[in-house]
Amino acid sequence: MENPDDMVYTQARNRLYSCSSSQGLDVSGANSFEKLQRTLSMELATESCTKECDHAQDRTVPNGDSEENFALAANDADSRKEILYNWSGIKCIGRRSQILHPKTDVEVSNLIKRAKSKVHIVGSALSYEKIMTVPLDDAEARLLSLDQFTGLISVTETTVTFGGGTPINDLVSTLSKMDRMLGCSLGVIGIQTIAGAISTGTHGQGLFQSDFASMVQRLKVVLPDGTISTVTPSSELPLGAIITSMGTLAVILEVEVLTEPRRVFHCKKLAIPYEDFLESYDEWNRQFEHVKVWWFPETDLCQVWLVEEASAELSKEFLSSDRTVPVKVSGESDEMNHTVDKYLQAMSDDTKAATTSDQPQFRTVRRFADAADLVGYHEQILCKGIPVPQINCEIAIPLNRFQEATKALHEWAAVQPGRIHYPFIYRATGKSAAWLSPAASGPVVWIGFLVYVAEDGSVRSDGMETMKQLQIILEKFNGLPHWGKHYHPDVFHFGEHIEKFSEFLQLRRRLDPSNKFLSNYLEKIFI
Ligand SMILES: Cc1cc2nc3c(=O)[nH]c(=O)nc-3n(C[C@H](O)[C@H](O)[C@H](O)COP(=O)(O)OP(=O)(O)OC[C@H]3O[C@@H](n4cnc5c(N)ncnc54)[C@H](O)[C@@H]3O)c2cc1C
Image (cartoon, rainbow, N blue to C red; front, side, top):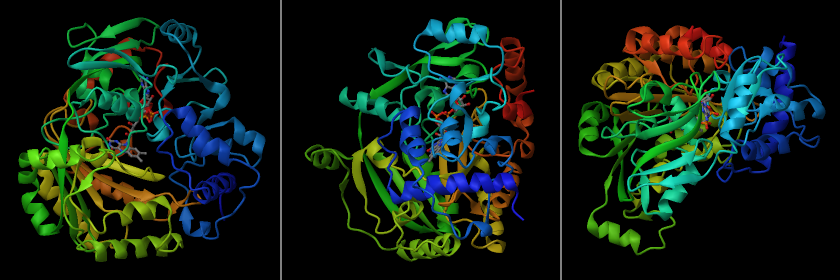
Protein backbone atom coordinates (compact mmCIF):
# COMPACT_ATOMS: atom_id res chain seq x y z
CA MET A 1 0.00 0.00 0.00
CA GLU A 2 1.29 3.45 -0.91
CA ASN A 3 2.54 5.65 1.91
CA PRO A 4 -0.03 8.46 2.46
CA ASP A 5 2.68 11.11 2.20
CA ASP A 6 3.71 9.66 -1.16
CA MET A 7 0.13 9.77 -2.35
CA VAL A 8 -0.21 13.45 -1.51
CA TYR A 9 3.09 14.17 -3.19
CA THR A 10 2.23 12.15 -6.27
CA GLN A 11 -1.12 13.88 -6.66
CA ALA A 12 0.45 17.32 -6.42
CA ARG A 13 3.10 16.44 -8.99
CA ASN A 14 0.63 14.81 -11.33
CA ARG A 15 -1.03 18.12 -11.76
CA LEU A 16 2.23 19.96 -12.29
CA TYR A 17 3.56 17.51 -14.82
CA SER A 18 0.52 16.79 -16.88
CA CYS A 19 0.12 20.51 -17.14
CA SER A 20 3.72 21.27 -18.03
CA SER A 21 3.85 18.88 -20.95
CA SER A 22 0.36 19.61 -22.20
CA GLN A 23 1.20 23.30 -22.24
CA GLY A 24 4.50 22.56 -23.97
CA LEU A 25 6.36 24.77 -21.54
CA ASP A 26 9.85 25.71 -22.56
CA VAL A 27 12.06 26.93 -19.75
CA SER A 28 14.91 28.08 -21.94
CA GLY A 29 13.70 31.66 -21.91
CA ALA A 30 13.15 31.73 -18.17
CA ASN A 31 16.23 33.36 -16.78
CA SER A 32 15.73 33.81 -13.08
CA PHE A 33 14.65 31.62 -10.24
CA GLU A 34 11.44 33.57 -9.78
CA LYS A 35 10.73 33.41 -13.50
CA LEU A 36 11.44 29.69 -13.57
CA GLN A 37 9.17 29.26 -10.61
CA ARG A 38 6.44 31.15 -12.33
CA THR A 39 6.93 29.37 -15.63
CA LEU A 40 7.24 25.87 -14.37
CA SER A 41 5.53 25.67 -11.10
CA MET A 42 3.16 28.23 -9.80
CA GLU A 43 1.26 28.74 -13.03
CA LEU A 44 0.80 25.01 -13.23
CA ALA A 45 -0.73 24.57 -9.83
CA THR A 46 -4.20 25.36 -11.04
CA GLU A 47 -7.42 23.57 -10.42
CA SER A 48 -7.77 22.66 -14.09
CA CYS A 49 -4.67 20.49 -14.06
CA THR A 50 -5.86 17.34 -12.36
CA LYS A 51 -4.98 14.55 -14.76
CA GLU A 52 -3.75 11.47 -12.92
CA CYS A 53 -1.12 9.15 -14.28
CA ASP A 54 -2.38 5.60 -14.73
CA HIS A 55 0.97 3.90 -14.23
CA ALA A 56 2.10 5.55 -11.01
CA GLN A 57 2.00 2.19 -9.23
CA ASP A 58 4.92 0.85 -11.36
CA ARG A 59 7.20 3.60 -10.25
CA THR A 60 8.60 5.09 -7.09
CA VAL A 61 8.99 8.51 -5.58
CA PRO A 62 12.69 9.41 -5.46
CA ASN A 63 14.49 8.17 -2.38
CA GLY A 64 12.84 9.02 0.87
CA ASP A 65 11.70 12.38 -0.44
CA SER A 66 8.19 11.90 0.82
CA GLU A 67 9.29 12.88 4.32
CA GLU A 68 9.30 16.41 5.65
CA ASN A 69 10.10 17.82 2.21
CA PHE A 70 6.72 17.02 0.78
CA ALA A 71 4.52 17.26 3.81
CA LEU A 72 3.47 20.63 2.54
CA ALA A 73 2.72 19.53 -1.01
CA ALA A 74 -0.90 19.27 -0.06
CA ASN A 75 -3.70 18.65 -2.43
CA ASP A 76 -5.31 22.06 -2.23
CA ALA A 77 -4.48 25.16 -4.20
CA ASP A 78 -3.84 27.37 -1.15
CA SER A 79 -1.15 25.10 0.28
CA ARG A 80 0.46 24.70 -3.10
CA LYS A 81 0.81 28.46 -3.46
CA GLU A 82 2.82 28.44 -0.23
CA ILE A 83 5.38 26.02 -1.58
CA LEU A 84 8.63 27.12 -3.10
CA TYR A 85 9.63 24.49 -5.66
CA ASN A 86 12.93 23.71 -7.31
CA TRP A 87 13.41 24.59 -10.98
CA SER A 88 11.40 21.68 -12.33
CA GLY A 89 8.42 22.42 -10.12
CA ILE A 90 8.53 19.03 -8.39
CA LYS A 91 10.71 19.31 -5.31
CA CYS A 92 9.93 21.56 -2.40
CA ILE A 93 12.85 23.64 -1.08
CA GLY A 94 10.98 25.81 1.40
CA ARG A 95 7.90 27.89 2.01
CA ARG A 96 7.35 31.10 0.10
CA SER A 97 7.15 32.86 3.46
CA GLN A 98 10.76 31.81 4.12
CA ILE A 99 12.28 33.36 0.98
CA LEU A 100 13.83 36.84 0.99
CA HIS A 101 14.99 38.99 -1.92
CA PRO A 102 17.48 41.53 -0.51
CA LYS A 103 18.43 44.40 -2.80
CA THR A 104 21.71 45.73 -1.39
CA ASP A 105 24.94 44.40 0.15
CA VAL A 106 23.99 46.02 3.45
CA GLU A 107 20.56 44.40 3.42
CA VAL A 108 22.15 40.97 2.94
CA SER A 109 24.60 41.70 5.72
CA ASN A 110 21.87 42.83 8.13
CA LEU A 111 19.66 39.86 7.34
CA ILE A 112 22.50 37.53 8.16
CA LYS A 113 23.54 39.39 11.30
CA ARG A 114 19.97 39.26 12.60
CA ALA A 115 19.18 35.70 11.52
CA LYS A 116 17.97 33.56 14.41
CA SER A 117 18.13 30.27 12.55
CA LYS A 118 19.35 28.64 9.32
CA VAL A 119 20.12 30.84 6.30
CA HIS A 120 20.48 29.12 2.93
CA ILE A 121 20.93 30.59 -0.52
CA VAL A 122 19.16 29.73 -3.74
CA GLY A 123 20.08 30.51 -7.34
CA SER A 124 18.02 28.91 -10.11
CA ALA A 125 17.45 25.86 -7.87
CA LEU A 126 18.80 23.40 -10.44
CA SER A 127 20.89 21.46 -7.95
CA TYR A 128 19.92 18.48 -5.87
CA GLU A 129 17.39 20.40 -3.79
CA LYS A 130 18.41 18.99 -0.42
CA ILE A 131 21.66 20.95 -0.37
CA MET A 132 19.70 24.17 0.17
CA THR A 133 16.32 23.07 1.52
CA VAL A 134 15.32 24.98 4.66
CA PRO A 135 13.45 23.22 7.48
CA LEU A 136 9.78 23.83 6.70
CA ASP A 137 8.69 23.81 10.30
CA ASP A 138 11.16 26.55 11.26
CA ALA A 139 9.48 29.94 10.82
CA GLU A 140 12.82 31.70 11.46
CA ALA A 141 14.72 29.82 8.73
CA ARG A 142 15.52 31.94 5.68
CA LEU A 143 16.23 31.23 2.04
CA LEU A 144 18.02 34.11 0.31
CA SER A 145 17.47 34.64 -3.39
CA LEU A 146 20.06 36.82 -5.10
CA ASP A 147 17.69 37.62 -7.94
CA GLN A 148 18.15 41.36 -7.28
CA PHE A 149 21.90 41.00 -7.80
CA THR A 150 21.99 40.56 -11.55
CA GLY A 151 23.65 42.08 -14.59
CA LEU A 152 26.97 43.52 -15.65
CA ILE A 153 28.79 45.63 -13.06
CA SER A 154 32.17 46.37 -14.65
CA VAL A 155 34.55 45.36 -17.43
CA THR A 156 38.34 45.23 -17.81
CA GLU A 157 40.35 44.09 -20.81
CA THR A 158 40.34 40.48 -19.61
CA THR A 159 37.56 40.23 -17.03
CA VAL A 160 33.92 41.05 -16.39
CA THR A 161 32.11 41.45 -13.07
CA PHE A 162 28.50 40.34 -12.77
CA GLY A 163 25.95 40.18 -9.95
CA GLY A 164 25.99 36.70 -8.39
CA GLY A 165 22.36 36.04 -9.34
CA THR A 166 22.96 36.60 -13.08
CA PRO A 167 21.89 33.62 -15.20
CA ILE A 168 24.69 32.20 -17.35
CA ASN A 169 22.53 32.80 -20.46
CA ASP A 170 22.50 36.54 -19.70
CA LEU A 171 26.21 36.58 -19.05
CA VAL A 172 26.88 34.79 -22.35
CA SER A 173 24.60 37.15 -24.23
CA THR A 174 26.29 40.24 -22.73
CA LEU A 175 29.75 38.89 -23.52
CA SER A 176 28.70 38.03 -27.09
CA LYS A 177 27.87 41.66 -27.69
CA MET A 178 31.44 42.54 -26.64
CA ASP A 179 32.74 39.79 -28.96
CA ARG A 180 34.14 38.01 -25.92
CA MET A 181 33.35 34.77 -24.09
CA LEU A 182 34.13 33.09 -20.78
CA GLY A 183 37.51 31.45 -20.62
CA CYS A 184 35.97 28.09 -19.70
CA SER A 185 33.66 25.67 -21.44
CA LEU A 186 29.96 26.15 -20.73
CA GLY A 187 27.72 23.43 -19.31
CA VAL A 188 24.81 21.85 -21.15
CA ILE A 189 22.33 24.58 -20.20
CA GLY A 190 22.54 28.23 -19.23
CA ILE A 191 19.62 28.87 -16.89
CA GLN A 192 21.73 28.45 -13.76
CA THR A 193 23.13 31.53 -12.00
CA ILE A 194 26.83 32.33 -12.11
CA ALA A 195 27.08 32.08 -8.29
CA GLY A 196 25.25 28.72 -8.29
CA ALA A 197 27.47 27.38 -11.07
CA ILE A 198 30.63 28.42 -9.25
CA SER A 199 29.36 27.16 -5.91
CA THR A 200 28.64 23.64 -7.20
CA GLY A 201 31.73 23.19 -9.40
CA THR A 202 29.68 23.28 -12.59
CA HIS A 203 31.75 22.48 -15.66
CA GLY A 204 31.69 21.77 -19.38
CA GLN A 205 34.37 19.74 -21.08
CA GLY A 206 37.96 20.06 -22.25
CA LEU A 207 41.29 19.15 -20.71
CA PHE A 208 42.76 22.58 -21.41
CA GLN A 209 40.35 24.28 -18.99
CA SER A 210 38.49 23.25 -15.85
CA ASP A 211 35.27 24.77 -14.51
CA PHE A 212 33.41 28.06 -13.97
CA ALA A 213 34.95 28.38 -10.49
CA SER A 214 38.49 28.36 -11.89
CA MET A 215 37.67 31.49 -13.93
CA VAL A 216 37.00 33.56 -10.81
CA GLN A 217 39.41 36.41 -10.10
CA ARG A 218 37.47 38.15 -7.34
CA LEU A 219 34.32 37.72 -5.28
CA LYS A 220 32.36 40.13 -3.14
CA VAL A 221 30.77 38.10 -0.36
CA VAL A 222 28.92 38.31 2.93
CA LEU A 223 30.29 35.98 5.59
CA PRO A 224 28.19 34.14 8.19
CA ASP A 225 28.86 36.91 10.76
CA GLY A 226 27.52 39.52 8.33
CA THR A 227 30.91 40.97 7.28
CA ILE A 228 31.05 42.17 3.68
CA SER A 229 34.37 41.06 2.25
CA THR A 230 36.35 40.93 -1.00
CA VAL A 231 38.08 37.66 -1.80
CA THR A 232 40.97 37.48 -4.29
CA PRO A 233 43.89 35.09 -4.85
CA SER A 234 45.93 37.18 -2.41
CA SER A 235 43.34 37.81 0.32
CA GLU A 236 43.49 36.26 3.78
CA LEU A 237 40.30 34.32 3.00
CA PRO A 238 41.30 31.63 0.50
CA LEU A 239 39.55 32.12 -2.84
CA GLY A 240 39.98 28.41 -3.62
CA ALA A 241 37.86 27.48 -0.61
CA ILE A 242 35.07 29.99 -1.17
CA ILE A 243 34.50 29.49 -4.91
CA THR A 244 33.01 26.02 -4.58
CA SER A 245 31.40 25.80 -1.16
CA MET A 246 27.66 25.27 -1.84
CA GLY A 247 26.65 28.32 0.16
CA THR A 248 28.33 26.99 3.31
CA LEU A 249 30.98 29.74 3.68
CA ALA A 250 29.59 32.91 2.18
CA VAL A 251 26.83 34.59 0.21
CA ILE A 252 28.30 35.53 -3.17
CA LEU A 253 27.15 39.00 -4.25
CA GLU A 254 29.52 39.71 -7.15
CA VAL A 255 31.74 37.57 -9.33
CA GLU A 256 34.66 38.75 -11.47
CA VAL A 257 35.59 36.17 -14.12
CA LEU A 258 38.19 35.87 -16.88
CA THR A 259 37.13 36.35 -20.47
CA GLU A 260 38.76 35.75 -23.85
CA PRO A 261 38.02 36.74 -27.44
CA ARG A 262 34.99 34.99 -28.88
CA ARG A 263 35.90 32.23 -31.34
CA VAL A 264 34.14 30.04 -33.90
CA PHE A 265 34.22 26.27 -33.37
CA HIS A 266 33.92 23.21 -35.59
CA CYS A 267 32.14 20.20 -34.09
CA LYS A 268 32.73 16.84 -35.78
CA LYS A 269 30.23 14.15 -34.82
CA LEU A 270 31.24 10.51 -35.09
CA ALA A 271 29.53 7.19 -34.37
CA ILE A 272 32.21 4.99 -32.80
CA PRO A 273 32.09 1.45 -31.33
CA TYR A 274 32.71 1.11 -27.58
CA GLU A 275 36.13 -0.59 -28.03
CA ASP A 276 37.45 2.33 -30.11
CA PHE A 277 36.12 4.81 -27.54
CA LEU A 278 38.01 2.94 -24.81
CA GLU A 279 41.18 3.03 -26.89
CA SER A 280 41.05 6.62 -28.18
CA TYR A 281 39.32 8.74 -25.52
CA ASP A 282 42.52 9.87 -23.85
CA GLU A 283 44.14 10.83 -27.14
CA TRP A 284 41.05 12.73 -28.37
CA ASN A 285 41.14 14.81 -25.20
CA ARG A 286 44.77 15.73 -25.74
CA GLN A 287 44.11 16.61 -29.38
CA PHE A 288 40.79 18.52 -29.30
CA GLU A 289 39.73 21.49 -27.20
CA HIS A 290 36.35 20.04 -26.19
CA VAL A 291 35.42 16.36 -26.32
CA LYS A 292 32.06 14.93 -25.41
CA VAL A 293 31.05 11.27 -25.64
CA TRP A 294 27.70 9.56 -25.08
CA TRP A 295 28.10 5.81 -24.73
CA PHE A 296 24.90 3.79 -25.29
CA PRO A 297 25.57 0.45 -23.54
CA GLU A 298 22.56 -1.30 -25.15
CA THR A 299 24.22 -1.20 -28.58
CA ASP A 300 27.79 -0.37 -27.50
CA LEU A 301 27.80 2.55 -29.89
CA CYS A 302 29.04 6.01 -28.91
CA GLN A 303 28.31 9.43 -30.30
CA VAL A 304 31.53 11.44 -30.12
CA TRP A 305 31.82 15.20 -30.51
CA LEU A 306 35.30 16.50 -31.27
CA VAL A 307 35.31 20.28 -31.08
CA GLU A 308 38.15 22.58 -32.10
CA GLU A 309 38.56 26.11 -33.38
CA ALA A 310 37.19 26.27 -36.92
CA SER A 311 39.55 26.67 -39.87
CA ALA A 312 39.71 30.12 -41.48
CA GLU A 313 37.54 28.87 -44.33
CA LEU A 314 34.79 27.35 -42.15
CA SER A 315 34.88 30.31 -39.83
CA LYS A 316 34.33 32.60 -42.81
CA GLU A 317 31.38 30.50 -43.93
CA PHE A 318 29.72 30.81 -40.52
CA LEU A 319 30.53 34.50 -40.09
CA SER A 320 28.96 35.29 -43.43
CA SER A 321 25.69 33.64 -42.29
CA ASP A 322 23.30 35.50 -39.97
CA ARG A 323 25.22 33.80 -37.08
CA THR A 324 22.06 33.02 -35.13
CA VAL A 325 22.44 29.23 -35.44
CA PRO A 326 25.39 26.96 -36.28
CA VAL A 327 25.80 26.04 -39.93
CA LYS A 328 25.78 22.38 -41.01
CA VAL A 329 29.03 21.50 -42.77
CA SER A 330 28.40 17.81 -43.54
CA GLY A 331 25.58 15.58 -44.65
CA GLU A 332 23.43 13.85 -42.02
CA SER A 333 24.64 10.46 -40.80
CA ASP A 334 22.10 7.79 -39.85
CA GLU A 335 24.69 5.59 -38.08
CA MET A 336 23.17 6.29 -34.65
CA ASN A 337 19.54 5.96 -35.74
CA HIS A 338 19.08 2.30 -34.85
CA THR A 339 20.49 2.98 -31.37
CA VAL A 340 18.22 5.99 -30.93
CA ASP A 341 15.15 3.93 -31.95
CA LYS A 342 16.08 1.26 -29.42
CA TYR A 343 16.37 3.78 -26.58
CA LEU A 344 13.12 5.53 -27.56
CA GLN A 345 11.36 2.17 -27.51
CA ALA A 346 12.75 1.32 -24.07
CA MET A 347 11.70 4.72 -22.72
CA SER A 348 8.27 4.27 -24.25
CA ASP A 349 7.86 0.82 -22.66
CA ASP A 350 8.84 2.25 -19.31
CA THR A 351 6.77 5.43 -19.34
CA LYS A 352 3.85 4.25 -21.50
CA ALA A 353 4.29 7.32 -23.72
CA ALA A 354 4.51 6.79 -27.52
CA THR A 355 7.99 6.69 -29.09
CA THR A 356 6.91 9.72 -31.12
CA SER A 357 6.14 11.62 -27.92
CA ASP A 358 7.18 15.27 -27.85
CA GLN A 359 8.03 15.08 -24.14
CA PRO A 360 11.49 16.60 -23.55
CA GLN A 361 13.14 13.30 -22.54
CA PHE A 362 12.14 11.84 -25.93
CA ARG A 363 13.29 14.94 -27.77
CA THR A 364 16.67 14.86 -26.07
CA VAL A 365 17.33 11.23 -27.14
CA ARG A 366 16.04 11.85 -30.67
CA ARG A 367 18.68 14.55 -31.15
CA PHE A 368 21.39 11.89 -31.52
CA ALA A 369 19.83 10.72 -34.81
CA ASP A 370 20.79 12.15 -38.22
CA ALA A 371 23.97 13.72 -36.86
CA ALA A 372 25.68 16.47 -38.84
CA ASP A 373 28.93 18.37 -38.25
CA LEU A 374 28.43 21.97 -37.17
CA VAL A 375 30.27 25.26 -37.19
CA GLY A 376 29.23 28.01 -34.81
CA TYR A 377 29.89 29.75 -31.51
CA HIS A 378 30.73 27.67 -28.42
CA GLU A 379 27.39 28.26 -26.72
CA GLN A 380 25.44 27.44 -29.89
CA ILE A 381 27.06 24.01 -30.06
CA LEU A 382 27.72 23.01 -26.46
CA CYS A 383 25.14 24.87 -24.35
CA LYS A 384 21.93 23.84 -26.05
CA GLY A 385 20.65 21.03 -23.79
CA ILE A 386 16.96 20.52 -23.12
CA PRO A 387 16.42 20.81 -19.36
CA VAL A 388 14.44 17.65 -18.63
CA PRO A 389 13.26 16.81 -15.09
CA GLN A 390 15.64 14.11 -13.97
CA ILE A 391 17.62 12.48 -11.18
CA ASN A 392 21.06 13.35 -12.38
CA CYS A 393 24.37 11.95 -11.04
CA GLU A 394 27.86 12.76 -12.19
CA ILE A 395 30.92 11.14 -10.71
CA ALA A 396 34.46 12.31 -11.45
CA ILE A 397 37.33 9.85 -11.50
CA PRO A 398 41.01 10.62 -12.16
CA LEU A 399 41.49 10.64 -15.93
CA ASN A 400 44.18 7.95 -15.73
CA ARG A 401 41.55 5.52 -14.37
CA PHE A 402 39.17 6.08 -17.30
CA GLN A 403 39.67 2.68 -18.93
CA GLU A 404 39.33 0.50 -15.83
CA ALA A 405 36.28 2.45 -14.57
CA THR A 406 34.59 2.25 -17.97
CA LYS A 407 35.25 -1.50 -18.18
CA ALA A 408 33.61 -1.89 -14.76
CA LEU A 409 30.53 -0.02 -16.03
CA HIS A 410 30.56 -2.18 -19.16
CA GLU A 411 30.48 -5.34 -17.02
CA TRP A 412 27.63 -3.87 -14.94
CA ALA A 413 25.65 -2.95 -18.06
CA ALA A 414 26.08 -6.46 -19.51
CA VAL A 415 24.34 -8.05 -16.53
CA GLN A 416 21.85 -5.23 -15.97
CA PRO A 417 20.54 -4.48 -19.47
CA GLY A 418 17.96 -1.76 -19.95
CA ARG A 419 18.49 -0.08 -16.58
CA ILE A 420 19.15 3.41 -17.94
CA HIS A 421 17.33 5.19 -20.71
CA TYR A 422 19.97 7.73 -21.47
CA PRO A 423 23.59 7.01 -22.41
CA PHE A 424 26.55 7.51 -20.06
CA ILE A 425 28.03 10.96 -20.72
CA TYR A 426 31.80 11.45 -20.61
CA ARG A 427 33.42 14.87 -20.17
CA ALA A 428 37.06 15.38 -19.18
CA THR A 429 38.25 18.57 -17.50
CA GLY A 430 41.63 19.84 -16.32
CA LYS A 431 42.85 20.71 -12.81
CA SER A 432 40.52 22.99 -10.86
CA ALA A 433 41.38 25.91 -8.58
CA ALA A 434 38.57 24.96 -6.18
CA TRP A 435 39.65 23.12 -3.02
CA LEU A 436 36.58 20.90 -3.00
CA SER A 437 36.53 20.12 -6.71
CA PRO A 438 37.10 16.46 -7.58
CA ALA A 439 39.56 17.91 -10.11
CA ALA A 440 41.57 19.80 -7.45
CA SER A 441 44.47 17.34 -7.78
CA GLY A 442 44.50 17.02 -11.56
CA PRO A 443 42.51 16.09 -14.67
CA VAL A 444 39.38 14.01 -14.23
CA VAL A 445 36.71 12.48 -16.38
CA TRP A 446 33.16 13.20 -15.28
CA ILE A 447 30.84 10.27 -15.95
CA GLY A 448 27.19 11.28 -15.98
CA PHE A 449 24.08 9.10 -15.83
CA LEU A 450 20.47 9.81 -15.10
CA VAL A 451 16.96 8.56 -14.82
CA TYR A 452 14.18 10.71 -16.10
CA VAL A 453 11.38 11.79 -13.86
CA ALA A 454 8.13 10.87 -15.58
CA GLU A 455 5.07 13.05 -16.05
CA ASP A 456 3.69 11.97 -12.70
CA GLY A 457 6.94 12.92 -10.95
CA SER A 458 8.00 9.32 -10.30
CA VAL A 459 11.04 7.41 -11.51
CA ARG A 460 11.11 3.77 -12.59
CA SER A 461 11.05 1.52 -9.55
CA ASP A 462 14.70 0.40 -9.87
CA GLY A 463 15.90 3.89 -10.86
CA MET A 464 17.20 5.06 -7.51
CA GLU A 465 18.87 1.72 -6.82
CA THR A 466 20.59 1.95 -10.21
CA MET A 467 21.86 5.43 -9.38
CA LYS A 468 23.34 4.12 -6.14
CA GLN A 469 24.91 1.02 -7.69
CA LEU A 470 26.69 3.14 -10.28
CA GLN A 471 27.99 5.50 -7.60
CA ILE A 472 29.35 2.53 -5.66
CA ILE A 473 31.11 1.18 -8.76
CA LEU A 474 32.73 4.51 -9.60
CA GLU A 475 33.74 5.30 -6.03
CA LYS A 476 36.13 2.32 -6.25
CA PHE A 477 38.15 4.30 -8.78
CA ASN A 478 38.51 7.20 -6.31
CA GLY A 479 35.27 8.63 -7.63
CA LEU A 480 33.85 11.84 -6.18
CA PRO A 481 30.43 13.35 -6.94
CA HIS A 482 29.42 16.62 -8.58
CA TRP A 483 28.37 18.80 -5.63
CA GLY A 484 25.21 20.05 -7.34
CA LYS A 485 23.81 16.71 -8.45
CA HIS A 486 22.25 13.75 -6.71
CA TYR A 487 24.61 11.54 -4.68
CA HIS A 488 24.69 9.38 -1.56
CA PRO A 489 27.16 11.03 0.85
CA ASP A 490 27.78 7.68 2.62
CA VAL A 491 29.21 6.14 -0.57
CA PHE A 492 32.12 8.59 -0.89
CA HIS A 493 35.38 9.17 1.01
CA PHE A 494 35.72 12.93 0.75
CA GLY A 495 38.48 13.20 3.36
CA GLU A 496 40.65 10.60 1.60
CA HIS A 497 40.42 11.95 -1.93
CA ILE A 498 40.21 15.71 -1.46
CA GLU A 499 43.58 17.00 -0.35
CA LYS A 500 42.32 20.14 1.36
CA PHE A 501 39.15 18.63 2.81
CA SER A 502 40.16 18.92 6.47
CA GLU A 503 41.48 22.46 5.88
CA PHE A 504 38.07 23.29 4.42
CA LEU A 505 36.31 21.82 7.49
CA GLN A 506 38.47 23.93 9.80
CA LEU A 507 37.79 27.09 7.83
CA ARG A 508 34.05 26.37 7.76
CA ARG A 509 33.98 25.86 11.54
CA ARG A 510 35.88 29.12 12.05
CA LEU A 511 33.64 31.17 9.74
CA ASP A 512 30.33 29.62 10.76
CA PRO A 513 30.62 28.16 14.28
CA SER A 514 26.83 28.00 14.72
CA ASN A 515 26.36 26.20 11.35
CA LYS A 516 23.93 28.87 10.21
CA PHE A 517 24.74 28.30 6.52
CA LEU A 518 24.89 24.51 6.72
CA SER A 519 21.79 22.66 5.49
CA ASN A 520 20.65 19.51 7.25
CA TYR A 521 21.77 17.49 4.24
CA LEU A 522 25.27 19.00 4.04
CA GLU A 523 25.77 18.43 7.78
CA LYS A 524 26.30 14.78 6.88
CA ILE A 525 29.44 15.78 5.00
CA PHE A 526 30.78 18.91 6.64
CA ILE A 527 30.36 18.20 10.36
C1 LIG B 1 19.09 19.90 -16.66
C2 LIG B 1 20.38 20.15 -15.93
C3 LIG B 1 21.57 20.25 -16.66
C4 LIG B 1 22.78 20.44 -15.98
N1 LIG B 1 23.92 20.51 -16.71
C5 LIG B 1 25.11 20.61 -16.07
C6 LIG B 1 26.34 20.64 -16.80
O1 LIG B 1 26.36 20.60 -18.02
N2 LIG B 1 27.50 20.70 -16.09
C7 LIG B 1 27.52 20.74 -14.74
O2 LIG B 1 28.59 20.75 -14.15
N3 LIG B 1 26.36 20.77 -14.03
C8 LIG B 1 25.18 20.70 -14.66
N4 LIG B 1 24.02 20.72 -13.93
C9 LIG B 1 24.08 21.08 -12.52
C10 LIG B 1 23.85 22.58 -12.43
O3 LIG B 1 24.72 23.25 -13.32
C11 LIG B 1 24.10 23.13 -11.05
O4 LIG B 1 23.24 22.49 -10.19
C12 LIG B 1 23.83 24.64 -11.14
O5 LIG B 1 24.98 25.25 -11.68
C13 LIG B 1 23.52 25.32 -9.94
O6 LIG B 1 23.19 26.67 -10.27
P1 LIG B 1 21.86 27.31 -9.68
O7 LIG B 1 21.83 28.75 -10.00
O8 LIG B 1 20.69 26.51 -10.08
O9 LIG B 1 22.15 27.16 -8.12
P2 LIG B 1 21.24 26.45 -7.04
O10 LIG B 1 20.96 25.06 -7.46
O11 LIG B 1 20.09 27.30 -6.71
O12 LIG B 1 22.26 26.43 -5.83
C14 LIG B 1 23.36 25.56 -5.85
C15 LIG B 1 24.22 25.74 -4.61
O13 LIG B 1 24.87 27.01 -4.70
C16 LIG B 1 24.53 27.80 -3.57
N5 LIG B 1 24.36 29.17 -4.03
C17 LIG B 1 23.52 29.61 -5.00
N6 LIG B 1 23.66 30.96 -5.13
C18 LIG B 1 24.60 31.34 -4.24
C19 LIG B 1 25.18 32.60 -3.88
N7 LIG B 1 24.82 33.75 -4.47
N8 LIG B 1 26.14 32.63 -2.92
C20 LIG B 1 26.52 31.48 -2.30
N9 LIG B 1 26.00 30.28 -2.58
C21 LIG B 1 25.05 30.20 -3.54
C22 LIG B 1 23.24 27.22 -3.03
O14 LIG B 1 23.10 27.47 -1.65
C23 LIG B 1 23.41 25.74 -3.32
O15 LIG B 1 24.17 25.13 -2.32
C24 LIG B 1 22.80 20.55 -14.57
C25 LIG B 1 21.61 20.46 -13.84
C26 LIG B 1 20.40 20.27 -14.51
C27 LIG B 1 19.14 20.18 -13.72
